[in-house]
Length: 259
Image 1 (tube, rainbow, N blue to C red):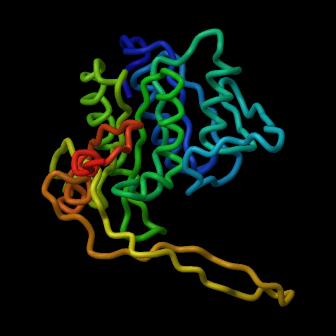
Image 2 (image 1 turned 45 degrees about the vertical axis):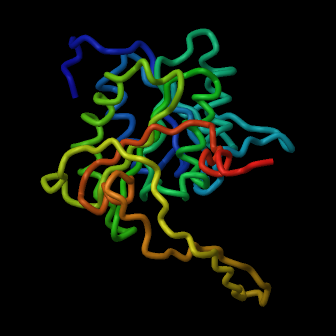
């Protein structure tokens, strides 16, 4: 972290996530933010909200809890947190940048559409703020290589910030590979891949009171190995940097239709 007297790039940064306000990855994102900004605000869900995409809460009240100076927990989704921050807590001075993450697990390929981490970045982009989603891939859920995120994500964020002119048309999705920090093979500008989601499992179980409940989980195929995809970059041990936007139109189909 820079010395306290070092010049900072921004005045305010908002940090949020989808893993919850107590998640270890949030601390990594805060460390990155403190390197860049004079003020770091944390507005994050009060519990894990993984997989909620850009859902916003409109059928029930949203609660806000102040945990410390410029630190808040929200009883809602990552998108709710961004809305609460920009529309209420920071309305008198909007953040120069929104960082979402660092997520426990990669957010790549088709699965970005489910990601609450990416959903927060989308919401910030929709509300006119530069936004970056940050994620750390892992091979073992109980041994996420957070030191890799600490080592390589600050440089990746700085690289993206040097392309600031593009924030009007996109937000950025950055993923660190599931390797040791010393083994990271650089950074790659990538396209959203097509890792094969072949289906979703619905597993029925019985609890100790003999009531039924269900777990959902993805089934994956071999995935996209195109050299310029986010999937390929992570497999090669590289940091993936993908510019994303709102337009989900499939241009080749539009061009092929003759009505």
